[in-house]
Image (cartoon, rainbow, N blue to C red):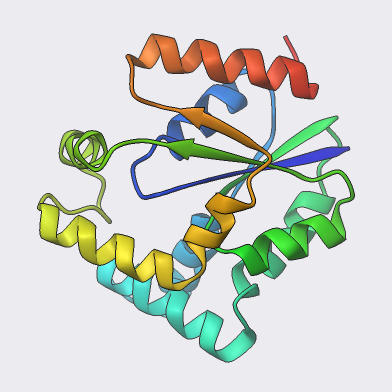
Length: 182
């Protein structure tokens, strides 16, 4: 089994990348789902503040790779030839995945601040917000987790600045190259 990961700033296109991969039959392990589960288990309201606080707490208590370690058993249960980890936030997570899964490939998605803010406003997820200040705050929080370092160590960079069909074709082509189905 080949394990790949996707990293990017908030709203860069990680979720879209994962959706495309899933549509091609690639199992997707979403790191944010581990945090969402922890928020739900704690009886907290599902919002950006609680997701961020829970992620910070888990990392403070268990180390900066805490969320990645929660994902490892989920990845190991998969039987597909290619598995995608969505939502990597730091270089310590990358290091753990590279240790656990030889040949791990990290893909970064690059997108402008303006494009990311427009996507957040349009998608209206329960854990989202709509102002530039809130996006800057989230960017700062995630960069504090080592996101910038993870972006720097990516093996492959994809630019998400065009249309959704253009991005989709890029992703499908890359996944076929990496061993995805169809």
